[in-house]
Image (cartoon, rainbow over all chains, first blue to last red; front, top):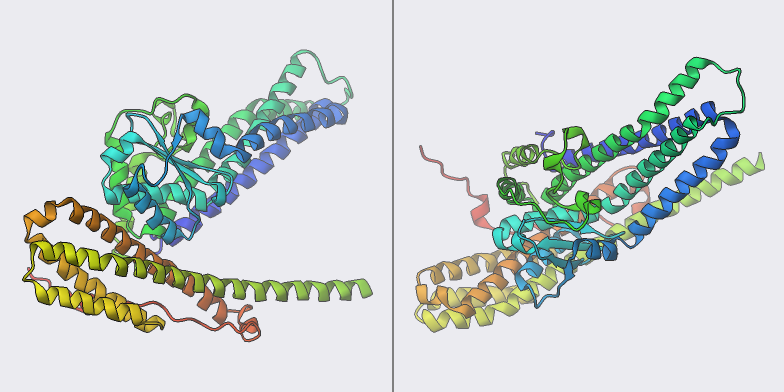
Length: 304
Length: 182
């Protein structure tokens, strides 16, 4: 019983995110330490701030303006109550259930059913749906989808993914700089070092970007699972979201994106179909998400 | 030595303020959540005259159903305490179910655009009422847990915050044991 209800799932997924974010921290430290071993203090103290700085400026700029930026990157248009009264009714329901402020609502003209949420905090939240999504979903299913998107807002997933992206970015830039420097014969400081330490730090520097990518994807998957659980805590109706995911799973059309950079924000990833391994995908396999929701349904109606 | 003592006292004061503020904040959230229930109940009450008139236009002789709805509505608008509001809310929900069941028997009514838009309004408002209840009960649960657990319970009297009442809808149908036949 305790393992499948939404409260247990929420806290388990939160715990895993903290663990993964901490691993990111450890990885960053490991990279900095390897750089220190290989290049000595002089080079490292110059390169690390630059890499971290570039990554921070890039990611946090887009985090701060995420609601506006994503609008232009996805071609979404803001709508008002008059454009879609039923959709607004449903969103207001979830707003009441979650206790969050009313988000901005946008529509993306697209033949694939999909949806996303963004915004730096609940006050600047934006949720968007493709036109096809509104056509194929019934009331309960759409409510489940809205609850999933509002869960991203409630769990501040734009912030979590910004943290993950900026660390992964810093690691990638750092590793890129340093491996280039190796080829051009950096490392002129001390020669009397343990060769094993040098080899290990070399390997760490080369592999770190891949490890960071894996961690970033793992964090994203945990946040998706968490959003599914939080959605159930809002609607207390796992069946709605489960049916919506089944519709998405059976639909093979993919959002015609303007940019792959925002692929991770959709409820159903437009890229995961192409990825080599589950380890690199930003979302848990959709069948797994459906199974988790089904398990919650079998617990019966949750009391208020 | 002095610095340690002053530091310890400062930490204790900060801790006490945090507990006090947490309780007061939870208490305000519960008030807000209850106000939200009332807003949604008011919305629903406002929809009813229009709905009754529309159904009457097609099914004039279902007088007892209309009366039940109107009576339940009158009761719900005068209730104030949590228990009274909850009881009146449950009664009105049942009366409305009766009204919609009547509407099922009249295809012309069901097809009328006026009825369809009222039905959408009513079902979203019903959902909002039940989500507002659920949110209220969730906030009451966190408040009551805080009032009864260490360390917040030491500050409850000081902050004048008490455990609050859950919003429980009196619905006789919910309490009946389902009759399963094989």
